[in-house]
Image (cartoon, rainbow, N blue to C red):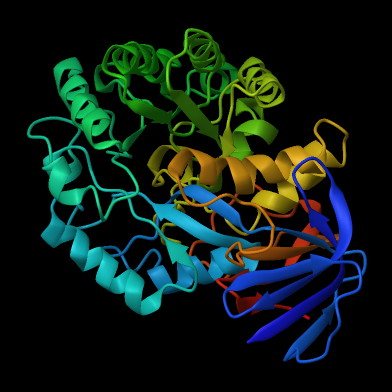
Length: 423
């Protein structure tokens, strides 16, 4: 297929430039101001639209195999394609856990059959993804896993994490860590802050997150492992990672749209506000935003975690932890961070499209001749209201329900193929 996109505002790193982009088969063949449409199978006039490298989400839950009543690879990647993502990295919270080549193949067979976009799965760090006990055979999984994670569990024993980091350092693989000290949880389910105390809930202390990050940054420094921290939510986490980077530790991190736009005082007695880690205090949100500004926070990932309606209908105490995020991430962040002047659009695109690729070795994220055509076309003038009933994801629980936002993806191109469009 030959596709010509005319008059687009094309992302070029530090700015947007008006250009035409010619795609032949799966690659960008030419970029210029007056490319002829002769021979093109399709011509798209993208006047006033923004052409960007497709978003990459390095932290999603596609729920297959094992939990297809929550989400499937087919529905999850359809939701991602709708939102402008051309690649996602699913976490190992599935059954069987991807703790061996045989178990990983169960997942990759589904991906090969049903995925609408590129999917790069994580393998677990421990057998059974238990956060303790026997480590996986890293060597047997290194070629099929984008990295290693026990997401949903923190690796509890220091000696286990150190051994895992040594293995991954030797293999050149990344560890993407969910940081949580089990003995500090004390039955908590929302942040141990002002709202928690006022409404007689059980709280999760911030130390349960940052204590393990502190430990792991030290271990990464000792072992030389490439270390990525999942979904940071506390001011202490930002400070620890900032200082570790300054020491030269090979550490990166992500946070989610909800941690940048909400805090615990925005909570309602509704399961759509319950996730792990929980929404923290206003000071934590401010620290995360400062981390975005100074580069301490590298990536914005959604932690898209769909559950059934029944699982999310039991209030803050009884509901399952997790919210959906793919279909709201860019509009919410564009509305709250870019439209307000907090960061430029180029910075947001870098954190959602380019930096994830750099960290996880998933391509350059450049729109240049010869590059694979993984692209999204954004209309920043569209204003709309978040309505979960319109999601392609099977999950419906979002704290952004009813928000009025601006900006929407209108076309997604993955390896030269249009996988979503509203034109």
